[in-house]
Length: 141
Image 1 (cartoon, rainbow, N blue to C red):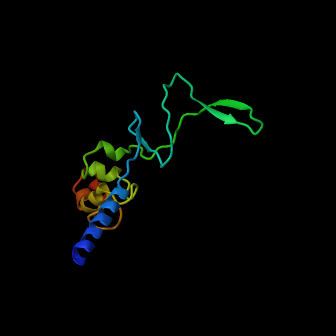
Image 2: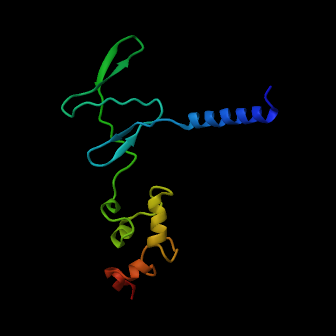
Image 3: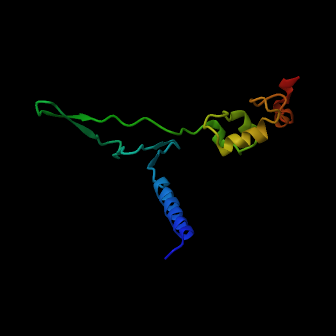
């Protein structure tokens, strides 16, 4: 017979493993040629066709008539590349181009706070050490 401690440890292990299994899920992400992406939501479907072919959706009417209508291309995006993507993270040009909090709390945002906004005023410009040591420092006088 197992002791109560062994049984509790066993139940705790099974419980933790089930939490990990519940948290693991796959997301489908569509990557476009321009660098933008779209993440499908749960139970959302996607159909891919060539630009020269049309995709049709079926519309079933109450009297059982069926109409096929051309489906318009999907234009929604989660991520669209910004100018800051072209520069080295943490550089003066990157600090000028980066939009703080545009993607929430991310590694880039933390880098911006540490490397760019050295005076902690929430913006990059005069008073920040990297800006004051750059070619743009002349505007601070």
